[in-house]
Image (cartoon, rainbow, N blue to C red; front, top):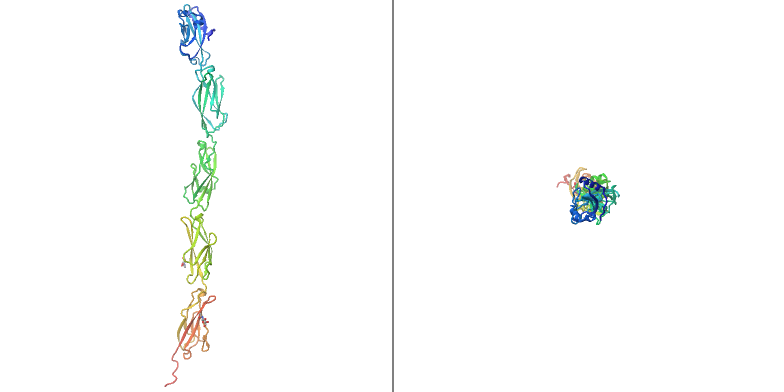
Length: 563
Ligand SMILES: *[C@@H]1O[C@H](CO)[C@@H](O)[C@H](O)[C@H]1NC(C)=O
Ligand SMILES: *[C@@H]1O[C@H](CO)[C@@H](O)[C@H](O)[C@H]1NC(C)=O
């Protein structure tokens, strides 16, 4: 398509040309259009035909093209009388965004001088895609940002014009972000990227968005921009313990520093917001002294003496804190297990320090209580008594034992017993305790006095003085105290019709036998004395002895006659 019109600017140029050469000339203007980027030699227009000039005239007139910038975009084919593309025409290089884009030149001939103004409009071809200034961009946004927050504005440029120019933008994906396509005052379209949903760094920390700019050409061309979105953390997560409750057990008496439990919490946030430290929570001070909690590792260690007998279970509140001010609490339950660290304890609940030797078998001597502070087998106690003694131990009630006699007692043989109780627990190794009591056997009058001899014989000179001690007897009683205190009594007999007591007396205390009067051999030659030894028991026991006293003759009578 071509058309002819007047162009004032060209006219003035032409006039200037004419004035310089002072030549009268025909001035016509002719107009063509050609798409940019046509191959060299491509047909632009048939000037000879369009100007009604014979092809021979072109030749004879030496027709040529004169342009102010001496470019060679368009050449004249003098033989054919046509204008053709002389070199590659890039509309964008030539005119930029100016539209329309025209090449203005003159075709000049001599003999006679003729001047024709030619305008070739270069038509745009969609040979440029929209281009972003950068291929990639990095942006950061807080995860707490509100929906609707603007992230950035960005635009692409498309050097083509008209319908081939930038047409619009699309975004992919649009799960969290979207765009608004806006126009600047000079009509340039740009994209405003905004947050269209909620972000969660803990779920998605990095997103890649592709912003595509498209033009309106056919085929359509496009350019893309990759937007790397980094979601920045906010402290929107509290620490979470890995267990709802921590359970542990520890033996009592373990050394300081023994690890009891390790608490652990995670925090989905990052940096300081996710840095967790551990602290004791609502705890009595004595428990705080018994355990140590490492702030960073969560290691709970022993820091004092753990005594099962004092406390069998500890419940410790532990708090996990992040450095952004969020915290969570949990409990650590520590069961203390028993170690056999307590020996049994023996307590004498009731005890008679002495029992009578005639006590029947089964008589209760003592009641003892046995305790062990440990638990389980460590606290299970068995109690026994030592050796070969006539005593036995029975368990009546739990933890109570009764010591009873189980044989014959005889004070005269065993006046006291040292009885040793042994209480042994079932721990491993077992612990035991001994307790010794001394039991006295009290006397019962079960022994009669025994005379050293059951029969005595002694001599006594006649004419003794009255009151003379003539003999003594002795009886022993193996009982004790009153039961062993022997009194001597003269058993009543007669001698020559007189009571024996008129001849002889016995000292009740000492057993000394005295003559009551002077004896005369010529009247009494022998005196038989019966003495009873009696103890002080109740009832008393006694035994007898016999003493035969022989009266010895003295020459106390003159001869009756001489033979
Ligand atoms: C009992 O123990 C005491 C004190 O150790 C001791 O003097 C006494 O002889 C002991 N008695 C017996 C019968 O072993
Ligand atoms: C001691 O002598 C008295 C009087 O003769 C007699 O009754 C008694 O049975 C005797 N006792 C003993 C133990 O011999």
